[in-house]
Each structure stands twice: as C-alpha cells, then as structure tokens.
Length: 357
Image 1 (cartoon, rainbow, N blue to C red):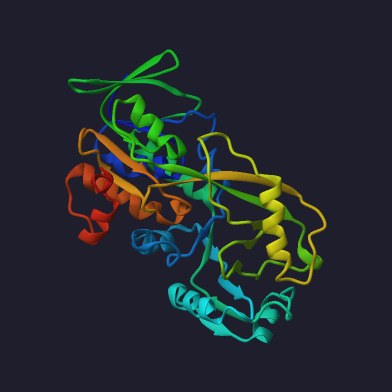
Image 2 (cartoon, rainbow, N blue to C red):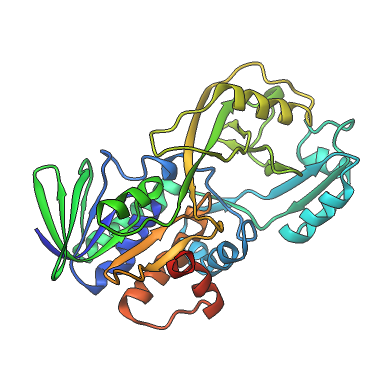
C-alpha cells in the first residue's frame, strides 16, 4: 500500500495529527493495539488546565484554547491547590504559577467538605480548568481524518522499517506500506520506532503514573468538586463518574509496556491524600497506570529529524498530550506543509528535535 504520510501510533498525538495532515495528501495511521488511545491516552486524568506544565507545554495548551472552546469536549471542573500550614512559600509559588486566587479554609471546605482543617493550612482555586471528553475528542479527530480520505488501521503492529530512495517501507504483519514521510507518534515506543528506522533515538523516557478509583468520600456528591493537587505535587484527586480518582503522581522510569499500578506506590500516594482529608480510603473500585513519555528536557518533540527530514517526531508529550494536542497537531501539519505557524519562534525551537542532538 502506498501513501504520502504514514503515522505510527494511534493515541491522541497520532490521531490529532492525522486529522491535520490528511488534507495534505494520502495518509495511513497504524496502531498496534486493537483500539485507538489504548495506552497513555486511554488512561489520562483528562483535564484541560492550560497553565500547567513547562513553558513550551503551556504555550501549546494556551494555543489549543480556541479549538477546545469550540469543540464541545469541555465541561467545567476547576482546579484547587492545598498545602500544609508550614508550606506558605511553596503555596504562594503555586498560586503564582497556576494563576490562582487564595481562598480561606472555610471557603475551601464549603467547596470540598472533606478537607482536613488540622492539616490543610492554605488553599487556592482557579476556574480555568475543564474536564475533557477524551473519547469524543479522539473520535472527532478520527472522523475528520477519515473525511479527508485517511486510512486508520488498528491491530497493526509495525515489525520492520526500511529507508528507501523515495521514503520508507514499513512492514506490519504480512502487509507492506510505502510512504514518503514517516510520522513517529508512538508514545512510549517512539525511540524504539526510531531505532527500527535506523534513526538515532532522542533519549525519551516513559514514566509510570498510577491511579486509583475510590467510592465518593463520605457519600458526598462530587459533581462540583474541583481537581485537587497537593502543594508538593505528590498526589492529586479528581471526580470521575460519581467516584474519585486519586493518584500518587509518581514519575517512575519504565521500559515501554502495558503498564499497571504499583501497589506500594499507590498506597503511599493514597496515604498522602488521606493526610489532607477527613475521610479514610476504605476500598478501591479499580486501579491502573499509564506511561507518560518525556524528553530529557521535559518538552515535547515536534519536528523533522535533522538526519532524516522525512522522519517526523511527534512524541514526548508527557502528561499533557490531550490538553496540548490541538496546537501540537496544527504545528506538525504546518511544519510538514512548510507553512508559517501562529506559535512564537522560541516555542517552535524549544520543541524542535534538533535541540536534543
């Protein structure tokens, strides 16, 4: 099968890129799993908080705002930071970086009544955070890509990649695909795809993030609770379908695999959460984990490989893949098409893979 563009990876990075790149020519997306968004994208906390992340991530997330506001995929959530009485300096730095307003403990407990008045000394709140309907977003991007004639194949694992005079020959199962440009959106496996293609890896590191779903604490209605993060960013919780998801917010390096939660790490994170609330965790409804993949400097990698211009990197989104996807995919399409981007040149340079060579 011949195609102008071949995307490897069917998470939010690959699917959003397919929607933006498909108007430029024939496009095929290959996903190894039997469904799209199976790994990190299917295990996301699903929050759009555009001021969360390092500067390149924040730039991408803010640039995604118009798309999200018009997409019908957001619903109000809000964002709260809580910290201990002896952590005022850290708390005020979080207020500044997240652009939050301080609230009294009485106000915070009126919003989230399980906050412990003996251990929570400070609270800040911002309305500029929304839940993302991640499934709807994925399906919308996939629908748009197919409307432009793109082919999306699941259950199609790439086993070999060979450079050719005209581009690439990619073997997946018993099929062979020929493409002019290869877009590497393989998430935790992105460096492995590069090695398979004879391209030097960038040093991307998958890092595990575990989650637990617990019953609504104290039987409360959680529908209006915000996402809450501890001041040290070593735990967070967020309402989810009538229950509460709690994460230890770990970032433990891992080899690429179908991740699962580490029970001890999860227990330690739940203990940090319990220390700030009045309701103990009595049981888990479910637990899971995903791999968030980072470049050495923590910024995503978007651009042509300096050694092989027809090998395009779209990887290293860390935990910010969904909230940055609209702008990240638009940048990818602009770079491939040779068009000017609306992003600042400094942001584009901070995302370019040449910075890691």
